Image (cartoon, rainbow, N blue to C red; front, side):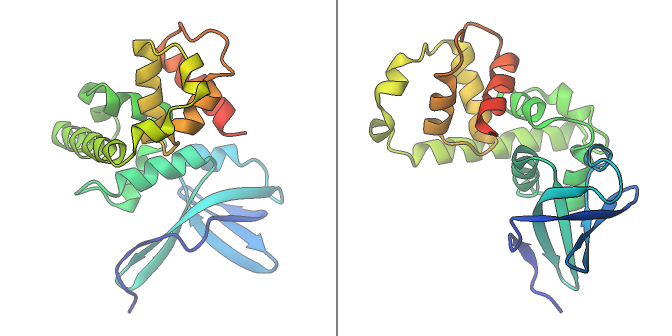
Length: 210
């Protein structure tokens, strides 16, 4: 029997794509085939058989089962790891959600208390959507409270126009696992910050994932 819990033994797996099924793939790494559960959207994005792929992974251990879950991007992995911390949401439910909502859409919904967007995701009802928002917003606030804001102030933060849109975009990116300092540095490269929250998040993700 295995100990029950969520651990992160494998940061990623890189190898040859050998098999694709409806909800998992098999990656060959030096003769060893790793079965990795993924969202249908990510499976489609991997491409053709024999292609070398890199998949960010999370190892789930549940009683007598060990399963690997995979993600094309770090943001999807972060979203998955946030979701499985919410009471009542397991690994399979979280991976299913990734096929129906992007990390940026998810972060915006949590940040803006958008229950309607979350409950459109298959398997997420009004109560589950409210619980996701309540628990993850609370978690983010606790993380922010543990940071000494004064130590984070530097010349970069002074150069950024902290409009409401910028503040909301920064909070959404923090939900996805990026630090305030990383986000401020990426926003410094965005010439015009007077744009929508969604556009700021997309531009920020593009710079942060490089």
